[in-house]
Length: 367
Image (cartoon, helix red, strand yellow):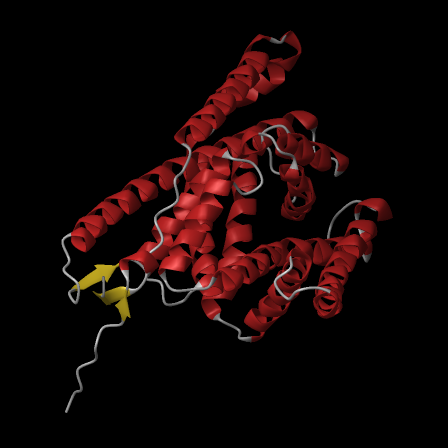
């Protein structure tokens, strides 16, 4: 005999409003992004010394570029899997996809992650009933976990090249040193998380528990601890998502090299990508300039011809910017429609009635 379950009861005020994305700010970022792209195209077209680069673009193989776009879609779906596994497995895959792709769309336009993308993710999690402190800790865990494959990749490739197990340059500065720095980064992050936990206890003893410093230290410590706990769970969606988010993105660069008639060793492409992507930390629209120079410069250090590296990186950056922007826009339109339907349903719901709320399922509205 089945037992009927009563829908959880919430108040209308318990449902956070969707984030108010500043359209003017996004419009300005898009205009800045477009202006930078126009300048790049003008330079490539008009500067006499770039004839070889123009030749590579004019003889590009469209099939490889299409493959790059498909790889970017797979990378985006991997991001969605990581988002859902880290933050809330109770979220439906549809909502996780709409939020995750919307975040990626914002991240493609606004540098270093984007406030709009973070706001969307935080709103969805608050809708699902997650506390603000837990969202903050899981955000730290998310950034740590998505960085782990990059760092591990540098360690494996760098040490492998230094030992002669993987083809690459003989210089220890380009092999052993990056691997050691990456390994030290993991150790320092874990040690820093533990230090933050102890510092939180000391700070809490000297001040109010809700003071800003203890809370920040607690968030950092809790985020690192939760990221390690998530890894120990061996969640297949999380592991596959982390590998796919990085792996598919690196292979976009591999496909653009082939599109423009070059094929450096795959391990060199990986190493150049992993180190060169650090340029994305610079606060410029879409990371343009910082990522491009970082990738091209690193690849040239690993003996890739500058013309081939420049063409491949520009093709990669075009795919990495516009595919998430298009997918994110479509996902955000779908999300807005869902919000509109939900808002009408809640407005027409009498106290005691039931309504389907995004992120929580069927709930009973109390007032």
